[in-house]
Image (tube, rainbow, N blue to C red; front, side, top):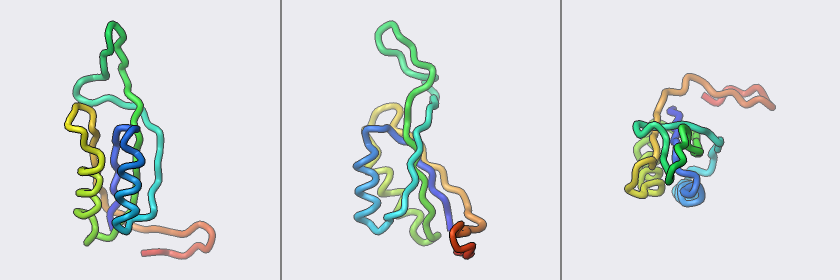
Length: 105
C-alpha cells in the first residue's frame, strides 16, 4: 500500500474529491496547511505573502491503484499556473483500526 499526499490549491478541493470518489477512492483526509514553493510566497500589489494557504489531501491506496489515483489528482488539480501543488507518494508499513485494534495489512 502507498500513501498519497497532495498539496493543492484550496479552490480545487471539490473537483479533486469528487473525481476521486467517482473513480472508487471514497476515503480521503483533508488538512489546512500553509507553505511556499520556489516562488517563496506570492506578491499581490505591494503586499508580499511569505506563506500561502493550501490544502493537503491524504489517501492510502493499493499499489496497483497508485498511478490511477495520481492521474486523477493531477488532472483535477491542474490550472496550469504556478502553485498548482505537489504530490508525494510513500510506502505504508501498517494500518490499524483504532476501534477494533484490527490490523488492516
